[in-house]
Length: 70
Image (cartoon, rainbow, N blue to C red):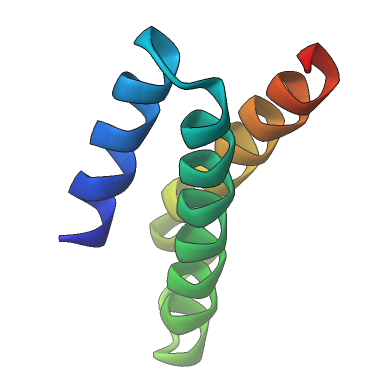
């Protein structure tokens, strides 16, 4: 549910409210970092856990780029 809200926030923020995009990107990044931690805690391999880390990095990069653009 939170991932869907974050994606909608990124889209609406991109089209209308840049501040909403920043908040959504930071929220999704945090969510993915926590997901990565959970995957490691349940002893998944790094390959199985890597997508969440990859998406966390992408969302953090989006947030940084948007903050620089303000």
